Each structure stands twice: as structure tokens, then as C-alpha cells.
Length: 228
Length: 228
DNA sequence: GGCCTAGTTTATCGATCGATCACCAGAGAT
DNA sequence: ATCTCTGGTGATCGATCGATAAACTAGGCC
Image (tube, rainbow over all chains, first blue to last red; front, side):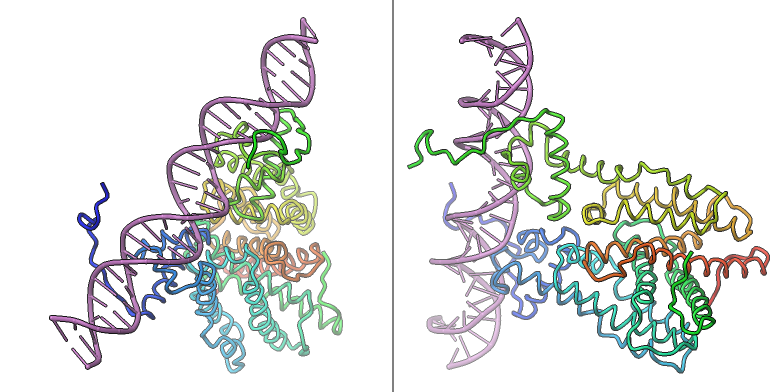
């Protein structure tokens, strides 16, 4: 048994790709695999998705961990190409409209099964890249939103938002983010009209912020704390 | 080499526990292990945490999956013993106070590393118990909150909340939930005063809801949609 | 004391994991 | 047609996984 050459199981015909193509194909399919299975997904399952054998992976990546890092880079950096700051800071348009547009675009980029699952898996691993992303959201998005809100409400500008204000923005942002989690991770029924969800959430947030701004103004720059 | 009996590595002295104690010890330590490592955590690592050998696990659980199910049951059901409905529905107290108290108690129960991590891991696995929990939050918490808010705002009661209203409550709830994720999963700096965070989030939510209620009342029971 | 039961360990199996090696084969250059 | 470079395969290693069977032992009972 087990003769030398003949009767090798019907090989589908070896198709060759350029090194670059093969490499990026590995990353793409690895993203899909790890999104579903977590980073415990096997290298053999990955190779099967490409229609190649498992050792081929190690022609392109020194180890599985290096492949994973590449997946991180692609997933985290890919949706960041858009000019967010410009949308949020363009004061020639009403704040309400800017926020609506920003969150529609932002959620278009990250609300999909692949992105959200990779993001949560990497968050659970507690990696630096996740901390970096959270810091990016805080500095590039929430801080900017708060600055625009304060300007819109006639409040004085401030270097950095207070911790309480920032927390407020986080709760708002997290609420929208959680919509994606419910839809694509939990696969729970959600309000299908995403733009409507964003619009409603903005109504709540802006109405609440304005009210707090009034109180703060009345009190001549008292802290925004509103005790219940 | 490898003689028969002698020189067996210093056994710490076999300590025997009752079946019940050992079993619950397995579940407790498994919860800790799986919270950190995910459900891919090994049975040998688990045994090491108990100071026993790995096959002992199979005296108490037919398979690792059965142990995992037990962990689910414990984690999901344990924090549900409290009388939530009563707190939310006791109309002799101001709504604001009820909501504040409820969310303080609720987050006391689930805002810890163990619970949140197990919850997210199980959510990523897409298990039925996760769907059940999400449905429970919707029916037992959010629906009730909305009912009380409508009553408080002088709006007519309705059998079930509209999809848009429910979404609103979800965004609010998810925002608070995400505070726990940021703190205990991402380990990001957050506003340390949790009660303050809840209070601020409630200010925003209630102010927004009231404003929408006014609009809805003005329009004589028009849909709550408020277009921006 | 001796015994018996039940909690625990030792040894081990088969599957699967990431990783390495030698070798094969397709396509452009000569 | 042959050479050569390189994308790709087959075989396999050691570690680790969940799980099983048999042997051992602690501790209550007579």
C-alpha cells in the first residue's frame, strides 16, 4: 500500500498566483476565518478556503501570529481612510447634519459581521492595537464632537473635554456601536432603518446636551453635573 | 530511566472533597479560566487551578461542553435573582430615582471582568442562551422602562413599544453597557464614578424622551419619528 | 483491625494543532 | 528542448488537545 506516485487523489490542477496576490489572499481569507472561529481557527482550515495546502502559509508568513497581526492591521486600518475630521468640523453646515452624516458613514464602514467580530475578539485579547483604536475614537471622534457641540450651544471652548462630558459622548457612541453588535453579533432583530436609529439617537443626545448646556449657562459655567 | 514507583514528584498530599463541593469548584474555576482564555481554555489548565489532575474533570462532567453549559447557566442566571421588575414599576417613587437605582444595581451585578468576558465570548459563539438573555433584557427591562417613561410623560399606554422606541431604549441601554466593556474588557480609563455616569446618561435619555413626547403630544399621537 | 466505597491518579489513546523539511512542477529565459 | 527560479505539495515532527480505562488510596463503617 501507499505506492510512490500513481493514484494521487484528483488534484484540481495546481494554480499558481503571484506572491503578492497569494499573500493578500491569505490575509483576506484569514480575516473571514478568524472572524467566524476566533483566532483559534486552524491553519489547515484556512488553507482549505484558498484551495491550497497548509504548509504554503509558511512561505508567506513566518508564523500564525504574524498572519494575525496582518489581519489586525488590515481590519483596523482599512476603514480609517475616510476624511472624518472634515465632516465633523465643517461649520458651514448644521451640526445635526454633520453628525448624522458622520455616523452613517462610520457605521457603514464598521457595521458588518467581519469587522465587528474581529474587533471584539481582538478586544478580548487585550492587545495594544485595540487600546490604540479606543484612544483614536476618543481623540479623533468624541473630542471633536464635544467641541462642536459646545460651540453650537454657545459654550466656551475648552482644551480637553471634561471627564464627565467625555463619558457622555462615550455612552452615546457606545449606544450606537451596540446597535451593530446586536445586529451582527447577536443577530437579534433591530430597527432595520439604520439612518433612522442614528437620527433618533442624535435627537436624544442633542436634546440632552442642550438642556445641560442651559443649566451650565444659567449657573455661569458651573460643572455640567446634574444630580438626580 | 523512568523507574516504576519511586521519586514520584512531590505530591502535595491528596485532599478529597465531597462530590458537590468538587463539582461546584470545577464550575467556579472554569468560569475564571474561560473568562480569561475563552472557551478554548484547556482542561489541564483548569485542573491545575484546582490542584488536581485533568481526568478528574470527567468524573463530574461527561464532556467539556457540559462543563461549559454549566458555566453559562451559572453566569447568566446568577445575577438575575434580584427583583428588577419591582424597582422599575413602583410608581410611588419618582421615575428618575427608580431608573437610577435599577441601573446601579444591574451594573453592580454585571460590571465585572468575569461576567462581561463570559457574556461576550458566549455572544460570539451565537448560542441560544445569549439570544434568550437579549430577549429577556428587551422584555423585562427595556419594555418596562419605556412603559414607565410613557406613563410619566402623560402618553397613552401601548401594548408593545414601537420598534423605534425600543431601539431608543436599546441605544441608551447599550451605551451604559458599553461603559462596562470599556472599563473591564478594554481596560480603558473611564469616569470612575459609575453612579455619576448613570445619572448623566439618564439626564440625556430622559430629556430627549420628554422632548420627543412633547412633539408626539403636539402632533396628537403622531409617530415619534423626529426627522433631522 | 480489616473492608468497601468513592474520590483521585497514572498511563495512554487518537485527533489536531503549528511548524519544518525535502521534493515537485509550472512558466519565462536561453 | 532545456535550464532555472519559485510557487506549491507530501510527509512528518513534537506538542497539546479532549477523553478513556485501570490502578491506587483516603476515609467512614462494622
